[in-house]
Structures are given as structure tokens and as C-alpha cells.
Amino acid sequence: MRARSVIHLWRTLCILAFAFLGAGILACANRENLLLPHEYRSPIHRFTFRYGEQWNLRTEVPEPGVEVMLVCADSLCGLGSNITFGVMYDAETAHLSQEQILSMANSQLLTRDIRNIPLVSSITIHDEGETQLGTQRAYQVWLTISFINNEERLRKMYLTFKDGYWYNVAVHADPDSFELAMTASQFILKSFRLQ
Image 1 (cartoon, rainbow, N blue to C red):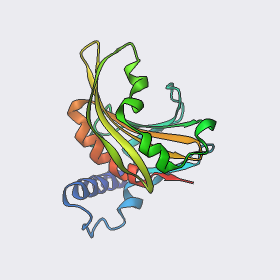
Image 2 (cartoon, helix red, strand yellow):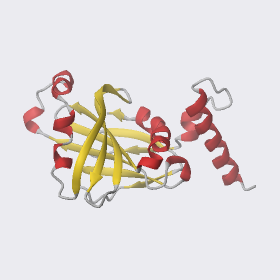
Image 3 (tube, helix red, strand yellow):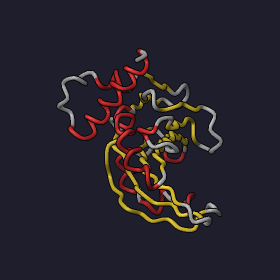
């Protein structure tokens, strides 16, 4: 077996072991460095995250407000799945605290732009509420987006805020691969930091 294949197999086993057995895996003790060997540092918007070999980084994303996207390149993270990292600055909210922003957040506010897309026929909210995104307090919304062509995509969005910057991190996947995508994205979401 080639060295790269062995490393890939080891990372795969560590991902699966951690996903199903939790943090007590001694053989994968340095799992963050092993599983997330790459780091992205936003040159403008002061955020970082780490990611692994099974994700391809795209910095030219045609979606407005999205700075970078990770696209799944491996069946372990659900082919067709992606994670977007978007940032928007709003000078009118720069004086507000994270606490104030999170107290106003709700699924109606966070999905308003999605509901206005002509190809979207409906949105179903599965869960929402405060959570953590890396070291930051955040608001999360888990939803299904139904399109007029009868296709569906699941999305779990995380919104956090600092000094007028609104950070939106979202995991997107088909219904069949959503659980896989969420499991594979947990390390990435936990590594998210504001500088």
C-alpha cells in the first residue's frame, strides 16, 4: 500500500472511531493535527478554521457574501456536500454586542433570503437555538430546502457576530448524505476561530 493510502486509511479509521466512540480513542490522540492538517486564515475577515484531506478548498465562490467553500471530495463526507463560510459587515450593528444579536436571532430572520429565491418552493425548519461554533457563541438553524423541481437539500447554518461582522457558516448536503456530512464537518466547525 502506498504511504498516502495508509495515511488516508488511518485518518478514515480515526474519523469513524471518533464519530462512533467519542473522545477516548488513544490511538488517535493527536486527531486534530492528523485529521485537519490544513488551515485557512481569512486575509480580510479575521477568521480561521482547519480542514482535512477529504475536503477541497474553493476561494472563488459565485455566491454573494461567501468567502470560501469546502467541497467534499471523498465518500466519507458525503459527495456533493459542502461547507460555506460567509461574512458580511454592517456598520449599523457594529455597536451591538454578541449577546444582543443572539437574542434577536431566529429562523425567520436567518432564512429570509433563502425564502426569496425563485427556485425555492418551501422551507421546513427542524431545529433552531443557541449553540457553539468553535469558541464562539452562535445561533443555529437546521432546515430542509425544497426546490420547484422536487429536489431537496438539508442545511445547518451557524450565525455568530463580532464588531459588526456577521459570520455565517453552513453545512449543505443531500438528504441521503446529511448525517455523514455533519459527522465529517464536526472537527471543522469546532476549529472555527475569530481573530
